[in-house]
Length: 244
Image 1 (cartoon, rainbow, N blue to C red):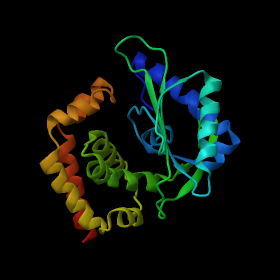
Image 2: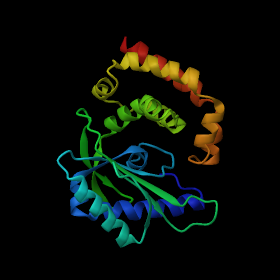
Image 3: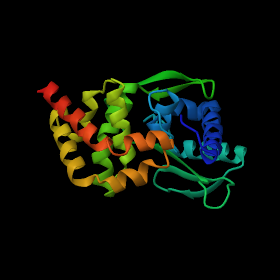
Image 4: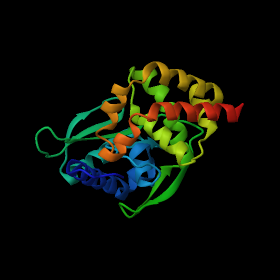
């Protein structure tokens, strides 16, 4: 995980404290599957800073019990729960920070079941523990779908999704096609056609700059900001050609 700025280092320390306590909690560790950008960064398949902790929930788990265990973790670490969803296990924790700097850690544990997801125990050196995580191929496929899902549900765009997709393709990772089909009801080729149209019509340089400048080192940001969109369009078009 990239942490080249002081505020990022502080945030990462808080993030790792919470993750370590979650994994050391026997109920939470058996009920949750780590996923998302922070998971990918800690698995060394993503090279950007990520600010949240995201989990899938084992469908056999009792969410009331999990909520109580999360609160036990937060209390043990001395964090204040600033906001909390009543309908899902979503928490916003506050920690002390200088004015105008990041001071909030978001934790999501969502009971959104995707039958095609695969999980595996993976050792994460940064916390020295083995964690049940989405596999690399599962992370990649869900990141591909996140572009459409985020816009359909919230009318929002996160250019970090596009950066991650570009990075995964350039790293020659594979994706689980079954997840794309299950979540979008489209073949991978048809979904990639949707992505090309989405990127062409919705993604601007301003959006790319606003989202990525706080997540990448200045050198990486300056290298990628102007080439991300054209390169990703070329990569996706090539993937469509390979699938057809």
